Image (cartoon, rainbow, N blue to C red; front, side, top):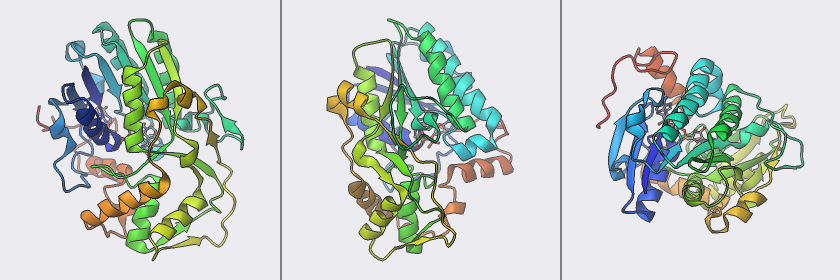
Length: 351
Ligand SMILES: NC(=O)c1ccc[n+]([C@@H]2O[C@H](COP(=O)([O-])OP(=O)(O)OC[C@H]3O[C@@H](n4cnc5c(N)ncnc54)[C@H](O)[C@@H]3O)[C@@H](O)[C@H]2O)c1
C-alpha cells in the first residue's frame, strides 16, 4: 500500500509513522509537512521521519495533483491543531483545516487515491450534557478549530463514493508519549507538572468528564480506516469508556503514580459545566480488532519513563516551545512565518 501522511512531523504523525512502518515494512510511506514543530523532538532516538521512504517539505495548501498520484491512501493529519491556536489564527485555521483539506481531498480523488482519512475531533460536539453522545448527536462546535472539523466532515461526505472512501475519525483528547510530545494536552500537562513542579493545580473542581485516547491507539484507528470494508463515508467516535475520566480523577491518579506530587484546587474552584462523555459503541462494533489498548495508568507511567530518559525538568514548560501556540508565535515574531502560517522563505527539510 502507498500511503501519504500529511502533518507527519507533528505529535500524532511520528507515532503513526512508526506504527505503520512496523506493521507494514513493505508499504511506501511518504510524509508531507510544512515543519512548524520539526525541532521539537522529545526523544533521544532517531526521528521517526527517517522511517519514511520520502519526506516532502510542502504546505498542504500548495500540494499538486501530480504529487498525489500513485498513492492508495491519504492520511490527513496536517492542521491547526487546537482551540487556542485556532483562536489566535482564525483565518489560517479556515484556510488550512477547511479550504486546504477540501482542496487536498478533491485533488486526491482526481489523482485516483482510493481512501482519505481525516483526523477529526470529539470537539465537534461542543459542551454536551451529562448523557453519552453518539455520532448522531447534535453538533455544537464552539471554536474555529471545532467548526473547521465539522465543516470538513460535511463537505468531504459529498466527495465520498465507491472510488473515494472517506473516514472521519472523531478522536478524543490525545495523550501519551511521542517522539514530538506536546505539553498543551491535559494528561501530558499533568504528568509534566507533577514531575517538574510536584503539583497539579486545578482551576475548577475538575468534575468534568473528558474522553482521552493514547496517540498509539489513534494510529491503530487510522490503520483500521486504511483497511476497512463498507460504505463510502464513515464518521466514527474513536476512544473507549476506560479512557473517559473526570479531570479531578485524572489529576489524583497522576499524583498517585508520581507519588511526590500533590493536587491543589484553586480557592474559588467551581464546577466545570463543559463536561461530555462520548459513546464509542459504533467503533467497537465496526473495529473489534483495532480497539484502544492503552489505559490511563500505563499511559502516565510511560510518559514518566520517557520524560526521565530525556531529563525533563522544566517547571516553566507552559512557556516553552513544547506548547504548539508558543512555537508558532516564536516563528512569527522572528519573521519566519506570517499570520497565514506560511513560511517567509522556503523551508529546508530534506526532500
Ligand atoms: N492532539 C489531539 O488531542 C487531537 C485530538 C483530535 C484530533 N486531532 C487531530 O489530529 C491531527 C494531528 O494532531 P497533532 O496533535 O499531531 O498536531 P500537531 O500540531 O502536533 O501536528 C500538526 C502537523 O501539521 C503540520 N501542518 C500544519 N499546517 C500545515 C500545512 N498547511 N501544510 C503542511 N503541514 C502543516 C505541522 O507542521 C505539524 O507538524 C490534527 O488534524 C488534529 O486536529 C488531534
